[in-house]
Amino acid sequence: MLSATLTGTPQIHAASKSFSASSLVGVDSNVFLSDTNPASGQQPQSSTFLQTSLSAELGTDSARTHRLGLSLQGLYKHYFRFGEADKLFADSALAYRYAAAPSLLFGVVQTFSYAKLQLLDTEGNTLPRDRFIAYSGEVRGYTQWLAARSRLTVGAGLRKKDINETADQVAVTFQSLDHQGYFAYLDGMHRLRRVDFGLGYEYTVLHYDELRAAFRDSTTSEANPLLTLVQHTARSQVAVRLSRWGRLSLDGQARWTHDTFEDELTYRQFDVLPRGELRLPFELLLSGGAGYRSRVYAERLGGGQGAADQRRERFLQADASLRKSLIEHLSVIAQAQFIRKTSNVPGDEFREQVYALGLSLAF
Image (cartoon, rainbow, N blue to C red; front, side):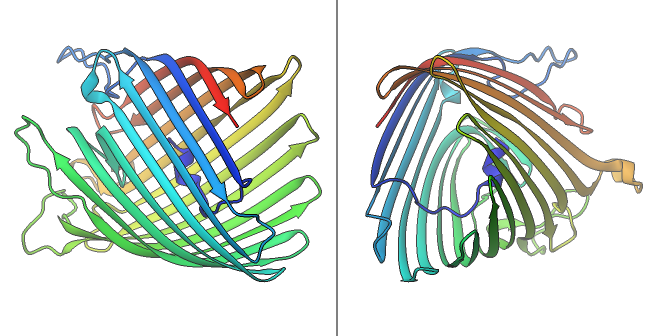
């Protein structure tokens, strides 16, 4: 959930080929991310689920001057009680890299994603609908300078997202949230013995195709311009390798999103994501982490003027996974996850717990 926001430049550095698949059975305590409401009788709905994921990577020798890589990932999650809440994701990345010199690389990465699920969270706004299908693509080019213990990457690219809204038997007609834009970024990394330090910055402009910007009271007019958002994102990372038996990392991100009309969707967001991995006796691998997100909007609640009236959201996520190798390439996995959202907007909170057990196959 939070980790997706901290993903860096998509580049394929894996072995020449790899494949993995997993299948998990579990229970989700809050499928529709709803809160308890005694007045309306609303209660979180739980369900068992079956989750299947596939991943494959194929690439030429990384030592060659020209390198081509392909990465494919897919995930399907079926809820036995609520089939309308099923989720399907598919991602692909095609990367080309040219080594002009041992310390100078040029590359192009093209990604494509498909998503089908029952809720949409875009720029912090969760909109209820029966389902939506989204196609998104990105093309970026980059230049990378390498030193003995350092790496510097500069790049830019284009993004586009097409959302096929479907409001089956719902009286509300949702406006199109299709958008496209461009971005530029700078990433640096330095290695000091067992510690890696990274810093990055990204500038993004998003133009919505049909959605008009709103006034601060969330009302809109046909005379308003189409929504444009400008984002400034700063990232940091520290990773520590603990000999052969573990690894720790701490990722951070600060994002300022500016609604160029009247700030109705302007917000500040901060993310912190600590993670760890520990190898235990009997071929056990314990991994886990936490995530915290704070988002504060320029939007005022109820027409207030003070800072306390600003719309605020907080997310807390914690997860743990225990993996045990059974035979070569085959492992059993046990997972647990907790997610909590709080907000000063009535009814915009939820709590979710997910537990799962399954098998993983990797080559």
